Picture 1 (cartoon, rainbow, N blue to C red):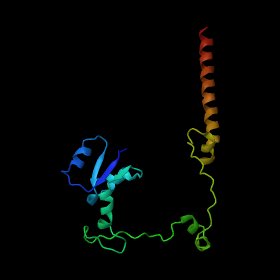
Picture 2: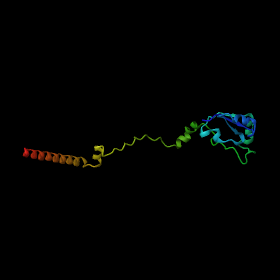
Picture 3: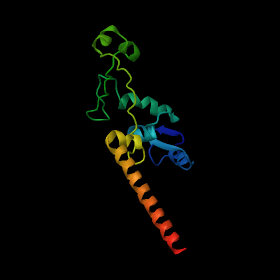
Picture 4: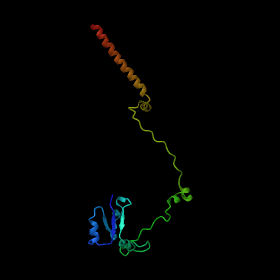
Length: 161
């Protein structure tokens, strides 16, 4: 955030400029060299701008009305406003504009979240219909191998005793 901005017509060597230049937080700018970044830094409006009376009186010389040409700024004319009627809501809601616009889109349901098939078995079953069958077979096979190893171990223990 910036402090107040003084707009003046004095030269850089005047006492006015020397006095305000030493105050921290205050910026000075000459009316003939206005800068948009000084007037509204960062594009944010609302900076406190203090105009001297001479600077305010000199504005029409620098920036004449929209039909005049400036003597101090060669070839400069004020930009003309694009809108002749600034009531935007009235324009948008007018019958002429509403006839041309398309219908309002209906709200679509959100897309479902993709689930990892390696973690979620139901998703894997949808992707691979034989997944459940092969999984059951592999479980039975591993159970049979475990049981066979247990029987073999118990047989070995029985014979040694």
